Image: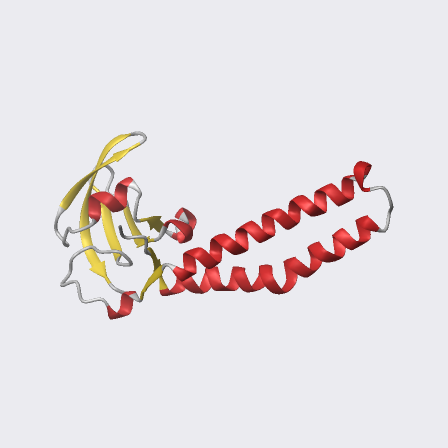
Length: 159
């Protein structure tokens, strides 16, 4: 069973930064909030204490999740890929929508780093699944929520 989590080098750095923030700053803030709430007396009717404990559970859960993902990470640097022009994880792909001529560029990334505003699509997304293994010049059909769309792959880059 393959339990590795694919991440680009950039995505791994983002997760490491978040983990550092949680461990060095957020933990301290939560501990201080719990101490402050405790100083107010009766904990059974103390909403501040309950909120601080909930926040603590969230922070500790997120720390455990990030440590697990980073521990299982398969970090891929797109600049070192040699996929001979094939679309693979971490590749950046220039596409043209054959219905309306719109051009768009996407990078195929891990689930945690996907952000459509930054043109980063998850490797599990319909468009990434349609693109994986294809080459420049190929036409792919993507099952989008609005119905099937056709894209031509203009260029595959490893940047």
